[in-house]
Every structure is written in C-alpha cells, then in structure tokens.
Length: 235
Image (tube, rainbow, N blue to C red; front, side, top):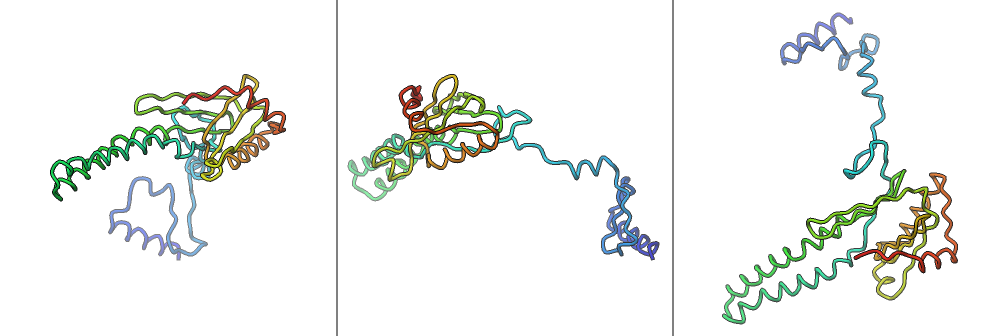
C-alpha cells in the first residue's frame, strides 16, 4: 500500500515539475494513510519551526533583547496651530474669485488653497505622529520630532522611576480627554503635557512597572512634589 502511494506521488510530482534535490528531506504524503507517512525531518528544520520568534523591532534604537510593551503619543490637539494656518491657506484660495468673480477662478483658487493647506499642515502632522513615548521591558524612550528634519531621543531606565501621576485640569482637557503625566525619577522629574487618555496611560505604565517588580507609588504628596519640581518639557 505504501509503495503504491509513493509511486503515485512520484508520478504526480514528475508531471508538475515538483521534484527537486531536497525531496528526501521531508516526504509527507498529502492524503496518505497515517501509517505510511514518512517524517525524516532534519534537526535544523525542526529547530527553525519550533523556535520562538524574537522581539519585533519597532524603532531603530531598539536593542535586540528589548521588547516594546507600550506606545503612546500626545493628543491631536497639539496640531491646532497647524489647523489654524491651514484654514487661513484655504481662505487665501478664495481671493482670486474676489478679483475675477467667475466659477473657474473660484474653484481653481479653492483647489489651490486646499493644496497649500495640505503643504502647510503636513509638518505639524509629522511632528505629532512621529513624536512618541515608548515603554519597553528595559527603559522609557521619548522620541521628539520637530518639523521635517529635527529628531531627538531621550532614554530613561525603568528602574529609575519612583512615581507616576497624572492631572486633568480645565474644561478643555476634560472635554477632549487629555492631560498631564508626571514621572518622578531618581535623577529628576519628567512632565509630559497634552497626553491622550492620561489616566489609562498611567494605569498601564504602573501595571508594567509592577510586573517588572518595580515599586512606583502614587501618593498625593508625591504628586505635589513631582509637579513642583518638574522640569517643563520643551515645546
């Protein structure tokens, strides 16, 4: 029975050009009975299939043994200045229709205004999207993107974090859901303004620190001290 299956498989493989020089490494016959399936798999192939995948690299400064646990950024409200400039650009696009009140001039100027608005707004979007805060199993990383050609990175070991607090103050922050996160460390304090969902980020950060065996208390007195001694983040 097994010989018949092997003969049938060889004929089909020959007809479709599927025979190659490594066919002896693995001969698993599709549809064959379980008692005649051959499994001579090499050890290196087994190790390749069973090996656990390594950490995915999310940023170029990431270490080989470093695993990303949390990524967050500021609220899109930080792009409000770019939104204002873009609105002005769209309004400027309607100026040609005031000079020559025709539909072609109106829609042509409006299209040019939208194009100018996209060009003006794009650097603000790049600054917001590529400015991120990354929490790994080893450190906290702040990547700041300013415009198109300025990028900086600051790293802080998680074992240096003493306290994590947040604050939501004012009608605008409460309505739009952003606030300030204050991180107290052995070397100073870090204040991150306009963070999207600060309560959620603080909770997830505390869970990560607790899972890593790092005690970061959040007493009210510590929050006041962290706020008074904070090093204001440069805009």
